[in-house]
Length: 244
Ligand SMILES: Nc1ncnc2c1ncn2[C@@H]1O[C@H](COP(=O)(O)OP(=O)(O)OP(=O)(O)O)[C@@H](O)[C@H]1O
Ligand SMILES: [Mg+2]
Image (cartoon, rainbow, N blue to C red; front, side, top):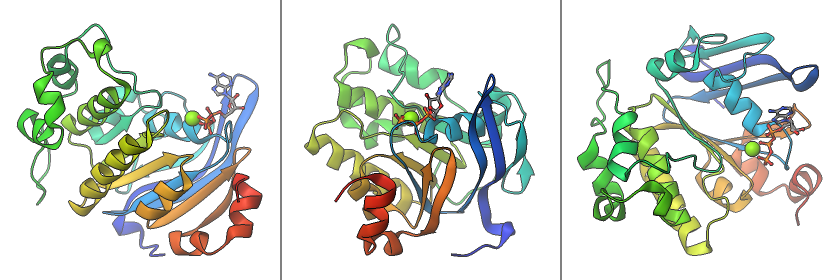
């Protein structure tokens, strides 16, 4: 795995996070290279969402550093972190149910601040990626199906033109056909050069897409390496993720 700090899109170093007195993350470290996809795996309650909340600033780490392209962001307010260029597709989608599809996309709109060879995200591009959202642009988000809400949650995050996209269990609760569709969308984003942290319980989906994999177990990093190493190590998967 490349470790040149100059090319790291996101570097989480030795992060400790708490809910009140409850110590949930213990010295968590991992790094995402620019243009790569890092899969973050772990059982229920392992601390995956807490990692995302710490990166987004919803939960301030008590110790450690989080750098976005070398700039420290740990401890900044969530809206500042979003403006710096981190987008989140939250677990459970969290679309604004009483707003229309178009309004959900509109609230997240943020122009790109720096030169980038990748085309900018806007309504047209999001609707081209998800034609079903275009057909439903005037419909209330709360009336969409689960799969459509997931597309909207992804589209909303893209409207912020993130330098790093965090996706927290985007396949959760979706039928197999829709899981495959979400997988194809993520593969397309990655092919366009988007740097992505993908949190999943779907191991196959993750191993198909990821360059690197981090496995988190009771708030600690239990494995950090390339995806190919995990694919061939069924004992590791059985021990850390409890399947096979
Ligand atoms: N708001 C909170 N207050 C107190 N404890 C919390 C809170 N949110 C999560 N926890 C606890 O922190 C631990 C990590 O939870 P987290 O949601 O990060 O796990 P996760 O890996 O995302 O799990 P899942 O796969 O079920 O989404 C769990 O023990 C959970 O009960
Ligand atoms: Mg979670």
